[in-house]
Image (cartoon, rainbow, N blue to C red):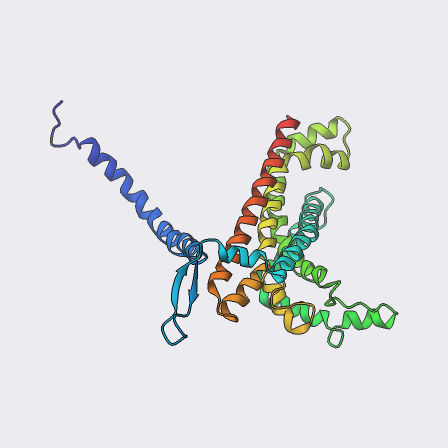
Length: 308
């Protein structure tokens, strides 16, 4: 087959079409490789090695391949085991509370009888714009009886509440996370509710459906995918718990340096100078997050297929 001068070869035409796309994709690809995959790979490699002093300690330290010993050391540590238990308990508290609160707020604002829905949507979303450190500091002042007008008022009527006690500290941290992220998750569910065609509501009302039937038989089933997404985001975010207990730790003795797995990894890396065990702890938390997300999606998908 003969090609004229004005007819480009197929290879040239393909390169011409791909070059603009690669120009847009390349910055993201480079940043993704450099700041996401590379740290993960480095943590995996670091978790398989240990630093040991040579001889009588006069020589330079050496990196020794120990395979899974850092993982066994981390999992056999009572403090790390306790931190994992607290993290699972926090998940049990936070995930249902977050999903229920965000869903209720979205349903309330998307009812036809809601007053000033745009105003309250902005009000509920505003805490998400506050950095987590600042929000924790603000709540910390409200959790201390000496500086909290709320606790002082409750004490005046005979209610002695100590939010940062060992029995209440997880609920105090869950309250901060709920205040920060419920509005964000509400926006996701609100967008899903707004995408439902109004004709479905009109047909249901003609058939005599009230507001409760609209919620249970139409709204909740049709935003099921968004609820699953919010639940998954909440599970992953809960397993990354670090900022709130770290900022609150100077205010109470109930939060130790290894209160959560991420805090334990942080303490091993920067206090105990044991980056290999810290990397192993971080990998363990990542594996737990992946496993919980996978199991949750499998359960949800299996129930969805059974429903159909």
